[in-house]
Length: 168
Length: 92
Image (cartoon, rainbow over all chains, first blue to last red; front, side):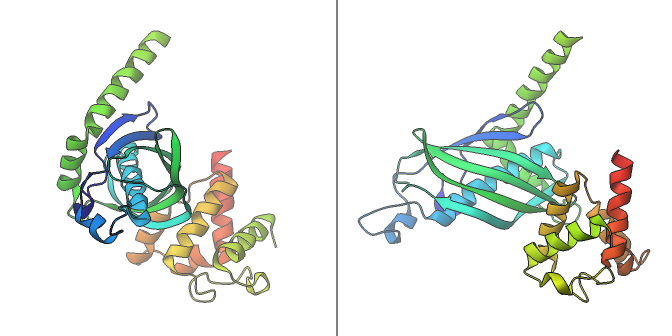
């Protein structure tokens, strides 16, 4: 994670066969300018950045589920609960489920755990805007490559193919 | 009034904090009820879930923006409910 650059996801680990769930992992940095103010002498990841982490993971799941057709933008956050402090060096496991794939929007349920303990969760709504209208397609694809989303998709595709092959 | 209208009106009242009594079949969701685009997406989500459909909101918006269809066609409640019933029938 690079908190000050809003790079919240380190690695996409899995996207399931139907592309309805995504798991990712991030490690909170030991040091960050964010911790200088939040808080002096007691560094904690701000709750809004945990929400951003869930939103980014949700966005990558929506991209995967829609074959990178449209850019997801965070629209609303419902029922967000910050359940535990997150300190430097914490390992975060992020899980997202695509609850609804609507027309022009998507709804996810996301949660973050650390060491098996639930840290936060929320329902997120994202507006999806076609890449023909926002010039972010190349940037997002490059970022998805860097995070391993494409590898995870390829693995899922292979697994799905094998499964179908066995069924046939 | 149809059962579809009653459910949609309940959803609108709950989502947008609009007095249920003010929501009529002839109400325009934008012009009369003042529902903004964010709340409308919440309403569409709730309708999708309630009826097990996917309202083609992007197409509707495109139709309106291109002047092919008047907003009343989709956004007056009795018309919206008729579209919902069509989508349900097509799915069945």
